[in-house]
Length: 111
Image (cartoon, rainbow, N blue to C red; front, side, top):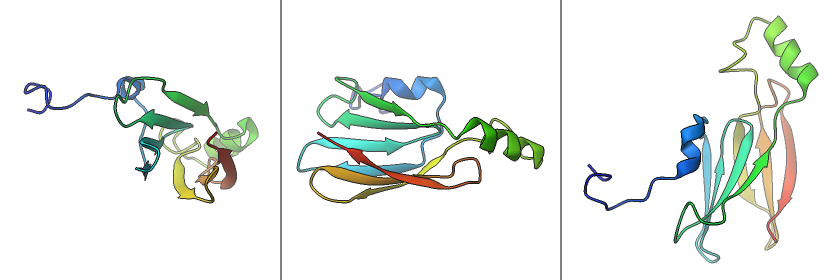
């Protein structure tokens, strides 16, 4: 209904079939961070499809192989699902992902 009424703008990055898991709204700077399967997106709130920045952050290949050997599904479980997006300070966000059942965290500089 929203699309038919032209009252929303869909995020075109979603056509990649990514599994979106977490959001962080930065109203002060007009941005939205989205955690997905193997990706982190930084979007402009005015136009979600303008100047989209994307970080590809997959799980290590050896961790994916261990995950598959443990009987997990390669497409739905053995990836780096971003679960945490937390402001750290004015310039960085703390991020964590599942890392194919071997969690990993880091910092993203938003500059």
